[in-house]
View 1 (cartoon, rainbow, N blue to C red):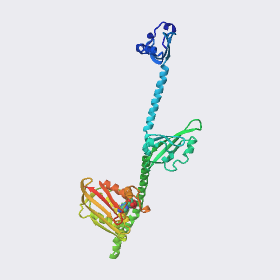
View 2: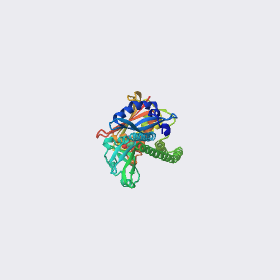
View 3: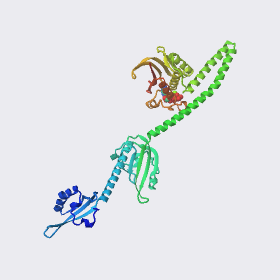
View 4: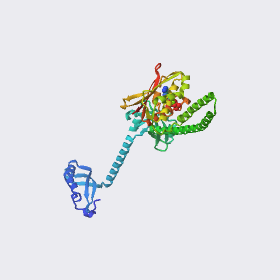
Length: 443
Ligand SMILES: Nc1ncnc2c1ncn2[C@@H]1O[C@H](COP(=O)(O)OP(=O)(O)OP(=O)(O)O)[C@@H](O)[C@H]1O
Ligand SMILES: [Mg+2]
């Protein structure tokens, strides 16, 4: 340990074996306190070997006295500290590592919970605080089942007792009563074979993932609805074209004015059918150029599509767009928008009512610019706040099989493309119910 054999050591003073620092410590601290106390334990000194290397050692010291309490000699035992230092630093490193891991667990966004064998919370990290809304102190002692919707855990407990890990997708209950999509992994902690000493649960909030999955599903549904719509349009258009051509040939061969009038009416009605087929079913087809659109003419032509149906339901429809300047926009798409809005107004007034389409120059105070405002107003059923909140979502409809729920979703998209905005005011208050859809196009 000291790098010298027994022969070399004999006759050497302890000072000769120590480093300079240790010699000073030995003489000024070690010896005086040894004389005072009679013994010292595990004092660290550093030995200097002949080759210049240094070795830390522990020294135990005791004083021997004769009968008259006179000090006769010291007894020192020296043992290597290297090994022990190694253990200590190893222990320190392990402890630091443990603290780091504990810190990661504490800060994790996933809820990490330690539970007793009875399923009672023993520790609760920040992630669990976030997910459930209880602080660590409030979380402690709660039963695991109480943190999820009833029956969420099923046969979990039996499986854990058998030593199995359990994974579940379920709904956690936030303190506020709100439920949250989560995935839960439960791990049993077994000691001697077959003895459950507790378990841990890792809970991850999957709301965002679920939302993304839903959006993906919806866009897939949408894509297939789009494909279906355009294939129907295609199928309808072919026979329509032949009938149009046939009527044209017929009109050139008829002499009787009354018959000619019938043929012409048939042509007009057919033009409307093909208009509906192209504009209603191929909703994603874009017009290529913006043109100056006369809103009065557009409103009248959209209403003419609905003339018969509006009359039958006792709906009085009026337009007031003369004062509006022409609007530079994609005509086909604005027509589609008006058709959707009029269709919704019609659906909301099955027992009669008033429908107004109005356009005028106006100033939008919210965005602080001048432009054209186009209003479609009805005094139909109106919408409650729940419906209003979901209005523009694809496939949201209150009409069962009567509606696809795509009308307003497409409308919003088309208006955004034209650089416009859409706003809705609606009330279901008895006697005053109705809806005003307001479109604004800045100059
Ligand atoms: N003017 C309105 N009055 C009352 N409710 C309306 C009105 N406009 C829209 N809604 C409500 O908003 C929902 C969504 O409208 P949207 O036009 O997107 O779909 P839809 O009319 O149900 O189906 P689609 O238009 O695809 O045939 C409707 O189901 C209806 O509940
Ligand atoms: Mg609609």
